[in-house]
Image (cartoon, rainbow, N blue to C red; front, top):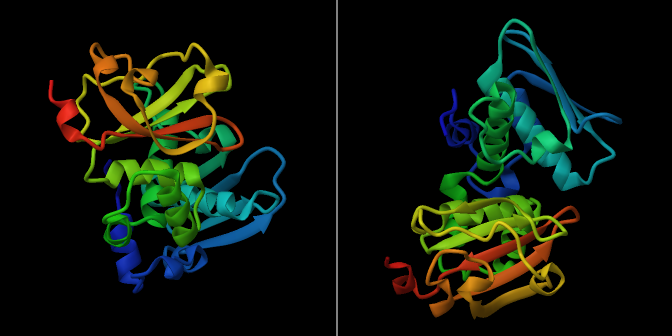
Length: 253
């Protein structure tokens, strides 16, 4: 995804090379944006800006890691959407937008702001060092989430995106209906998760690095012949299944 300024470049310009140094207040200051943490009843974050100056408000009733992501999101609007009259009020649903809808221009900007936040908080040149040799499990996601002070959901998505091993993250609602998914570039386009799980109470039980038949999660013809490694967790809203093809040869069509 293209940004008007790359998160990596912004961070390097102020000398940030370790996750503990990712100070969003400092980053905002370097971008000429003031940040206020105040109670907000109808949104998680807002921004008002002109061509050169912005004021960002973040809901201080939210969990601290949520506040960090929200601030990164608003900085995404500031970097990419600034103009004479920049005004956004972003709610929790905006912060969960992952897949672009071609006919919804406003929603596309929310997706871009979310991706910008993820790359600002888990920048390529730092994050890549931390994921080397990690198995694709919830243990690894939890470790990375703590190192980068992020939610497990945002971390799991980034972990899948940047991984050199074939993996996928799938989000399900409580009824077992798929909400969204991400596969990395190593997983072929013909591999698709189910639209709906038949027995969600059983399938969505927490797990960590368990080998299961691939057709538990994958609808593609022939999935019953193979296995994958699953890890399942609940994020307070939805269930996430982290899927890893440890034997990459199974993905050969």
